Image (cartoon, rainbow, N blue to C red):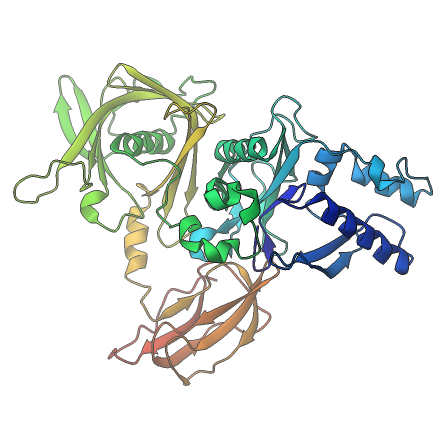
Length: 509
């Protein structure tokens, strides 16, 4: 499978390709290399017309391709080793194509730091958590048939100067169906937090009936099935519930209270719990001989204010009574349409420094999972992000279900409110970090909606930034050659229908 400028999923042997045609392609590839006197590892690509069954030479790469592991797995040949041996003047151990073994089926999915919901814009930032599904990154795991090739580890940065690929997930199965099943399972078990990835998109592609039918694969797959595999910005890997929101809120409380322990032991004394000196001090209620505090957390990306509040009341023992407000379909709404609490939970538990979350719900239900919390304190709207992976939550063997939620940073929310009054709709911002390559407008120029304002380059791809409305360019804040960050204001455009324009926008240096 592929989309413009990017391959997505590769497999070997080729899907539904007759043996005779494969042998003919191999012979043509060998003849092409011999014609130019090429000696080393190389890759020859052909295009196949599915109607006429004719194939055509596309290109030859004088190197191994990114997807070479799928060939290695079905042949048992280490292609990198062979390439080095050729360079050293040694003779190939196998010289007859008929002697090359072929066993099973292999697939490779490329894991990218990108946002499928924003037209696959490349992403940058800190990888706060990276946990591949394979037990070893040094080769195929013989028990699971899973291999992960990566140079990224937890704490590394994804920058703007290189391709945003995080890793290659390679699986091996006895046949194509077995390989697909392992691919889907491994993708769902792959844990990455800190940057958006294409994993949800890959899962949809691998689970699509057309992909699972070998004869239906072609270069137009994504065009033919665009709606089926499209990833929406609110598209979760698993169904988000009031309970998952409550657990996420509990994680935020532990994080901001600095109640993160080692191996489940909290670094906090009983004396400090529920005191007025807590970082989360809010409105107060008196309960018995101990004071309790109330904190309201807000989901950052929820458009409906009445569907975003989570109220958290502290208990003297360190637990919290957490009430989730929502207007979801399963809620029993009050007669006048006022905000309704759909569920309340008493939650206690621990979060260790190795991201192990253990919680007890209402004194009986226990949930253990991986939970990663990271914060964006530098943006105009500071947020805390909570990523959770719960093993077998829906009783499907071997699959981790992921929830990802963003909440307004409870300690920095005032700065967010101040910033929201400073940045107006006339600002055109960089959708990602990158380099400005072309500026198509000048100050004072009138533009129409969708006119090209700026072209920028990021991670080997060109991105066009267009006018959001008819209007006039009031201020040009970027020049060719400049490196900009995600969210930097590039141009100020006065809306033709607006009477005034904000001229003192907050500019991020």
